[in-house]
Length: 168
Image 1: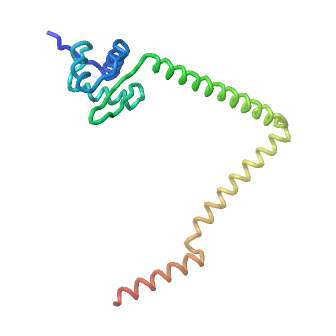
Image 2: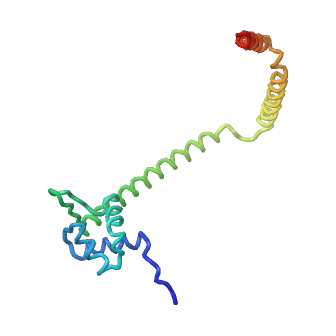
Image 3: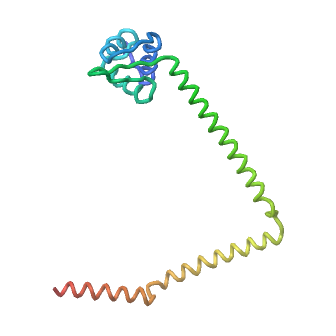
C-alpha cells in the first residue's frame, strides 16, 4: 500500500499557471478555489498560498475592485516577461565579458616589468626578511607594553579611582 505523495510547491505553481493560460480568463479567489482542486489536483488548503506566491513573483496580476480581488495571467505576459529576463541576462553577460576583457588587459599590463630576474628575486628576499624583522620587533614591543609609562600611569589613575569609590 503506497501513500499518494502530494505536489511540490513548484508543481502547484505550474498547474495554477496552466489554469490561467488554458482559460485566458479573470478569476476571483473563490472561483480558483473551486477550479484548482477539481481540474489540477491542487489541495484546496494550499490554493490561496500558491496564488499569493504567483502574485508576489509577478506571474499573476491581481486587482482589487470594490470588495473583490480579481486574478489573471495571460500567456503573452509570460512570454514578454521571459523575453525581458532574457534580454537582461544577455546584457549582464555582455557586461561580464567586457569586464573580463578589461581585467585581462590589466593583468597583462601589470605583468610587464615583472619579469623574474636575479635583482627582483634578491629584492623579494630582502622585503621578506624586512617583514619578518618588523613582526619580531612588534612582538618584542608588545612584550614590554605593560612597562610603558603611559600604560602604567593609566593603571595608577584607575586604581586611585577605584580606591576612592571603595572608601565611600
